[in-house]
Image (cartoon, rainbow, N blue to C red; front, top):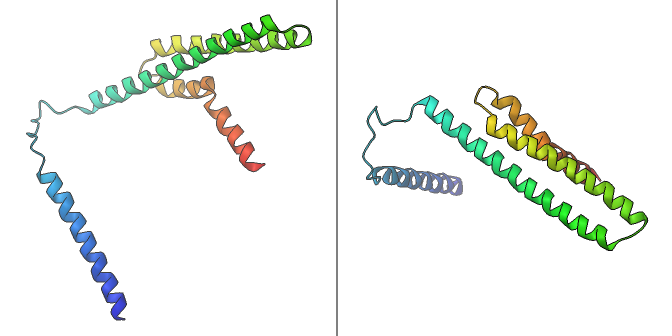
Length: 145
C-alpha cells in the first residue's frame, strides 16, 4: 500500500515539475505580443498552407522528372551497349519511362496552374501521378507475403 502511495506522489511530482517548466518556458518568451492588425488572418493562414503544399508537390514532381531523365539516359546508354532481344526489351522500358516523364511534366504544368478552389481534387491526382498509392499497395503486398 505504501508503494502505491509513493508511485502516486512521484508521478504527481513529475507532472508538477513538467507543468512548472511549461509555464516557465511560456513566460520566458520576450517576444512582444502582436496587436490585432499584425495577426495572421485565417485566410492568410490557408493561403500559406496552400502555397507550402504547392511548393512541396512541385518539388516532388521536379525530382521525379530528374529521376526519369536520368533513368532514360542510363537505359539509352545500356541500349547502345546491348544487342538482340535485350535491345527490344530496353526500347520498351525506355518508352515506358518516356510516358511516365510526359505524365509528370503534364502534372507539373498543372501544379503551376492550380488554385485553392480545385486543390482537393488535385491532391488525389498528385498522389496518383507520383505513384504514392501504388507504393503503399506494393508495401502492403510485400508485408502480406
